[in-house]
Image 1 (cartoon, chains in turn orange, purple):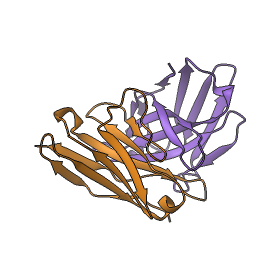
Image 2 (tube, one colour):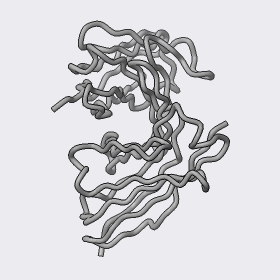
Image 3 (cartoon, rainbow over the protein chains, first blue to last red):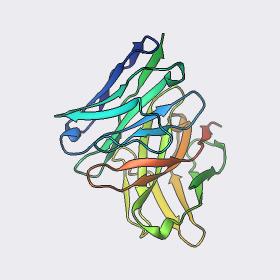
Image 4 (cartoon, rainbow over the protein chains, first blue to last red):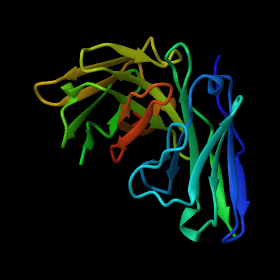
Amino acid sequence: SSELTQDPAVSVALGQTVRITCQGDSLRSYYASWYQQKPGQAPVLVIYGKNNRPSGIPDRFSGSSSGNTASLTITGAQAEDEADYYCNSRDSSGNHLFGGGTKLTVL
Amino acid sequence: QVQLQESGPGLVKPSQTLSLTCTVSGGSISSGGYYWSWIRQHPGKGLEWIGYIYYSGSTYYNPSLKSRVTISVDTSKNQFSLKLSSVTAADTAVYYCARTSIAAWSDHIDYWGQGTLVTVSS
């Protein structure tokens, strides 16, 4: 069955750049969307489509895709970016999938 | 600004049916262009898509839950609902309702409810 794979944890020094990746066969056909979730809160959409940011999302967040891998890049990570990040996509059968999530630590 | 709010019992007994309703405000379920979705998150775990409904009533469910899930819509009340039958402790989770924006090759969830914790216990 289709699935999306993320690294469980990633860390970045304050102000540095970090890339969070998501792999899956469905990403060859469909873009990933990315969600930030802080403890006790609902997820928030940060990137969707080719590289689109909803209103209110800082421009340090960007997205890209190549082959079966989608990436979320945070350029100049801030302390408030520490959170769990989830990728999401659909497959050709109509299933909507989530990656297992990546816990981002800002050092 | 679209807002979604889950409501329903926070405690369900094993083998019974979990029932939740999502009330949408600030936008019409009937406007088209969106799937109305249910997603859950087990304590300390990741997100799991349960399924969605289109305003016309068309549904799509996670194959792993399909035999137990029913999602329905009431456009007159601007609400959609989730029923999950034969629950066990493994169904204890925070349940979110959400709006999925339909876009070519890039569906995305642009609005989420705050989530509601449902515990399955006798």
